Length: 118
Image (tube, rainbow, N blue to C red):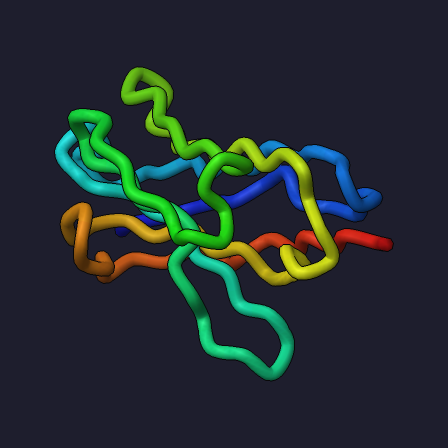
């Protein structure tokens, strides 16, 4: 059974930083692409960043230069370092497993709330 457990969300002031973590189990982690998505109230879920097992990455234009996705295959964990946060980054952030650098995987975490105050 695949499990993805996100952590690290919270309330932060604009300009601040947070690091999200997603611990995976039940999959051969190093062989799976991983991703972060977010969903703000009243909006569709959108891509934030993805990373392959080999470390290739892609980012949404809105977060390029501010967010960094990384992974530790020894710990079965993917991270999202978020710097320069703005209120527009407020959303529930979801971890995703599977797929490729360009396609969404089948597995989702439960989400973690990120709230950025102005």
